[in-house]
Amino acid sequence: MLEQEIDHAVELRAAKTLFYVLRNPTRVDYTENDRIKASLQETGLSWSEFRSLLDTEFPQQEREKGYKPDRVAKKLVGRMKSWLLTTEHLEDILTHNTLIVTFADALGHICRSASKQQMRILLDGLREPKYSKPEQVVLLKPHLAYATARDRDRTLEPFSEVMFICLDKVRTGNAGKKDLKALKVFAEAVYAFFYRYAKN
Picture 1 (tube, one colour):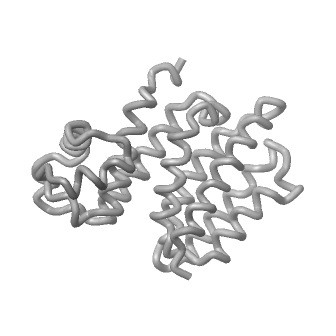
Picture 2: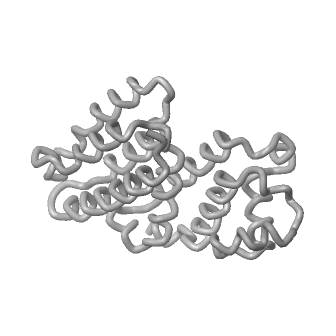
């Protein structure tokens, strides 16, 4: 089964590494020092783990260009999408709470320039009775597409890309109810972290 092929521990370490770099681009000077070692404690990674994962995510040529936030964010969103696509059922993400929280935290940070009203409308859509059945939730796609198209700065694009994958993975019937629950848990976690970082 597909979910057995995913090394969730590796995914978690990679996600934490990328998220650390996204938030601290100027601290990553690629030299082990007390400042980096102290700040790495929040990720739970050792210096050797951090450096190894950084080497994997950013080849030498990319490291020379610096850790620009948009490039790091793109890699993080790519990780999220890949993880979701290779997870057999959406409900399975609930068995990896730490990874969900890390990805939700990262996505909330990446989308922090979007307006609170925009994000609230998208989240409220999941709670509307007309989308309470798994067969109906796919109808949220047009709302996501419209909100993203109206967003001139494209700050909602990463959120929409990830949500589109989640919506596609919601099954029908009783199994779909579990997928829908997982979708709501993840979306609400993203919004909670987004609200923490939001600029407006």
